[in-house]
Length: 325
Image (cartoon, rainbow, N blue to C red):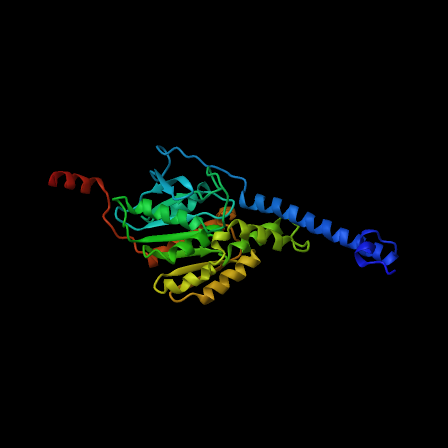
């Protein structure tokens, strides 16, 4: 009576079925290990270590105000508003992954010195905020809530905003800009097209990205966690909605994957558009000379594309206003 295949696999008696059983067991445990490691990696990636920066609002240069605002479904947020010329446009700075608002203060100063109003805040899972990052899906809602909060002030132009963003912040900025006519100029530094591309970069930075299926498993877990957005198009689809909005793309040569994506998106973007290629990415880690050059490039772009106009709140004007009353 012939031995059934199932019986032979359950109780192998021949050398080749024993070998096959061992291989199947190794494959099973390898896949199981990959899934377990991917789950842990994905958790570490979407919940980065937070760093919170506090400043003395009364003595800090630039006379910032603390602004509270609420993001639907995500909770309360705090931001710093640095006033420029009264009635001038506002530049909202959107920090990158594993960064925070406190690391952007030199860029804030450079913009405020040229009379722009400037606003900075922390995304979910960054700074003092709990939660997890969605690499831009929900962060774009945070950008919208920040713009809404500043637009309600009586010392800004509520219809003219500029956005600056680095990787995570760049994705969130472009995602919001595609549906917000108040955004009149954008700087996108090292942007990506799909959030899962940042998951890939995060896995590869751990050194295990070369293991079979590791990246794919982490991306699958991330997409499952953000299933609501499964039908979302790439963020580059928003570019066609910004035909009259000037965009400066910043391409960093030492970040190859994001560099290539940034250049591709620049080529897809309608005019007016600009491309700046720099040697090193991540503004907050640049040496002083490169940081100053970077700040000058960003300030020059916004001055040209989002002119500072408004009513300056000088003591003389204040006295005149009081006398009129």
